[in-house]
Image (cartoon, rainbow, N blue to C red; front, side, top):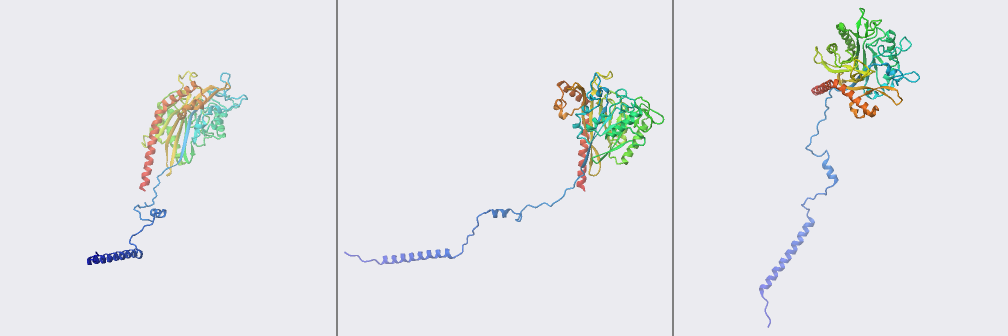
Length: 478
């Protein structure tokens, strides 16, 4: 049988239709708004190298503050240095240069000429770092045509070629005031000066004329160093002519710088006058070379010590002694009149070369006469013009007497630099026994001067530190 439609179903259908239409309309509206309205979300570009570089340029705001540009004051400083060296006695005994049957000396050649190169052949490397070097010429150069033959003790007369050997080894000056300066009388005395000067070396201590200046100023790298050279006299005439080594008095006064032990005040007065003259002439530092003391004594005697102290009191900066033929100690002296002034004193430099060897002299029983020293001092000039003694150096030397490959007798001066000790045997062509002799010589010398060297080096180092600290403080305060 057929059923009749309900009224409530019709109402529900109507409501659902309206809701569907409303949802469709709302969806359309939302889509429209998304298309037509601007976005409210901020977008950022991708990072790039340009952005990073921009962020690190100096134009960006930074918390760092650039310091102002300033110039620090420059303290006074070293502008020049001068290293001055000295060696001991060139005591040329005849066996060193004469082709005697017993010695067959290498210095004398088959044609009768002389070549002293072998004596000095190892020295050049040690003198090269020095700016000025002196040695004591304890012989005369009289030649063979002036009434004197070549010979050694007691009247020394050596061939002129000795000077060539010395010059080629790097020396600049020969000290000519010593007890053997007048061994060949006036002819040898004057000819020695002529030969040395003629070969381009300076001389100091003896003079060809009484009018010559009795001191010299060596200008070394812009530093003016005043130098004096003196020897002891065994007696003096009333008119002031010294006798050297007991020989007759020099013919003319004023040709030799000397001191006489019985009249030291006259010596002191003369040195004081010469110091004034040197300083007036611009000397900025001073060195005294002096021939004094007692032969073969390993310590200075009272006279040496008295003279050294007086020289310190007068203002001498460095004293370098010779004559004892052995090394003597080194001291740092303090002036009694000006405690701020110090003087470096090496009482004796020993023999640079000689034939005084253990077993050849009855008066000695050690090998100390075979030993010498290459001693040097270094001066520094600061930018304010002041000159200071800044350093010292001491290289022991030893004379190696040996037969060379030709059977000739050679005397070689060996500089025993401790920095090259392991090389001595190859540097100097020594066998094991001779190398040991060189070591023994080094030890002998350092036992005598080592303590003094250490004390002086320590003092000068401390003074330099304090000096440069003072200069720095002065600059910072300006």
